[in-house]
Length: 85
Image 1 (cartoon, rainbow, N blue to C red):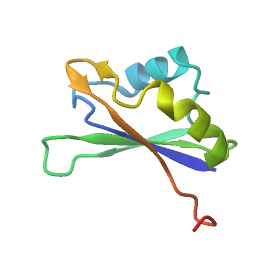
Image 2 (cartoon, rainbow, N blue to C red):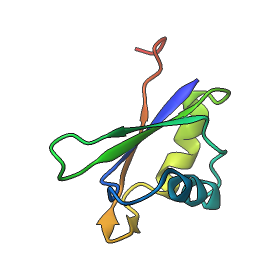
Image 3 (cartoon, one colour):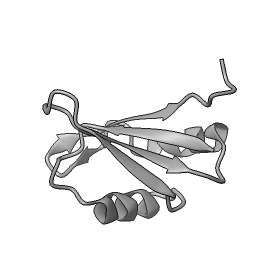
Image 4 (cartoon, rainbow, N blue to C red):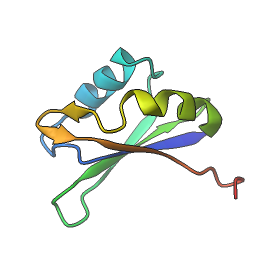
C-alpha cells in the first residue's frame, strides 16, 4: 500500500477529476482519496493505492510534480510507507 500527496489542488476539483488527471499521466486508478484542507491556501489530496508499493509510485511522481494544473502548481510527493524509514 502506498500514498501519494498531491498538494495545492484547487478545492473545487472533484475526486473524479483527480482520478482522470492521474490516469492520464500513467498512474493506476487509486483506491481511496482523503482531502487535507490545512489553512485553506494550498489544499491537498492524499490518494491511496492498496496494491501499489511506494517505490512504484516514485517512478510516476516526476511526471506531475511541479505541473501547472487548474491555475495552480502541484506539489506531489510519495509518502513514506509505514515500514520504510
